Image 1 (cartoon, each protein chain N blue to C red):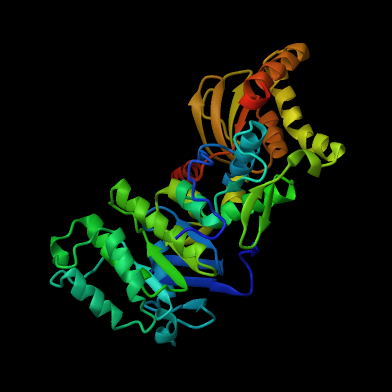
Image 2 (image 1 turned 90 degrees about the horizontal axis):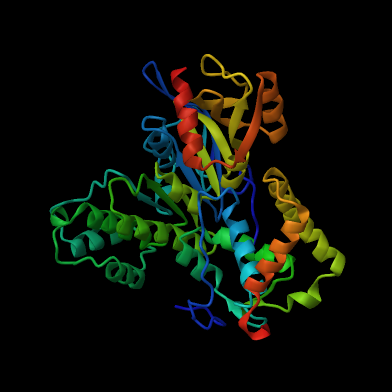
Length: 303
Length: 142
């Protein structure tokens, strides 16, 4: 098995220097994201950071103002049939036709995709414990999500795009969604791009993580490398500082008296050098979780 | 739908993945499989679960499991053969003594650093290692 790099030429998704403005507001600013075939990319960031806008460009529902968007090497705006026929998509707003029964919805969805796999659809129906005779509008949030997931998986798409798939769902349904992602990649060559604010899920299944902040890419790399590039450390000051100390390379610093916790990006040596410069020494160093990194980076915005 | 060569015994290998842990997930798998082999809970010739099965069991990316198995194969703990699954091998015969000591140097350094910070003497560390070894011995060799 190969471990392709995110800039790989045979990327299934290739977004280069994409910018998008809504009026005066910049929704995306010089964004470049590559998703190699067979990998899972997790898109993270606060609400309004630009995740859904980015996904809309992949589906061809927004046209690139500047920059370039390619899915399977195709322009999703110019060739929507060529792209969407190979993409499975599930959004947070599951706009399913509420008046249809589950079985009707499945038949309706089937009509759009020549590659529909009836046996697989039946298997998913059973696995998700959906009642085919039930009207969609009478289903719970979780069941609606499963119905949406079923129709985006049943034609075995080469690329699965999920926009906040777990949003507002209970742990059991979230588990089903996570397993669907895992099965999709386990099938040779299939690719997944999903956005989520549940960072532990991203950490579990994403090969690559891209963090957006106010339309800009602030982190982009292999999940474990993104974590390893940060240090969560405790600094001890010989003289307790009067106010919160300022440390070069720190994203967040909190504490009081002589002990302060800091989230730092850089190497251990750089951290020790920076700490020495402000009269502190490092007493504890940990690799932070993605959650801690996101929170620390988001907190700095207020400064 | 179990792949060929898999006995299907899901109790064979129980791993725990922690996201809080600083170590990457693939490394946690590598360490734990090595621990299970060292403790005799995985025996030479025994199958480890197929990539897909372990990925679903742990709810992690199959690429991560594949990477862990590749690393375990590189270190001579398992062998992967198409259609025959991934099997534990006789670790003892595969690595040269020098290679084995090289692999142990890094965790040893880490242990010594911890001991130093905690003001624990080297003699006490050595005693601790003997005690832990006694605890880890497989039933059969007691």
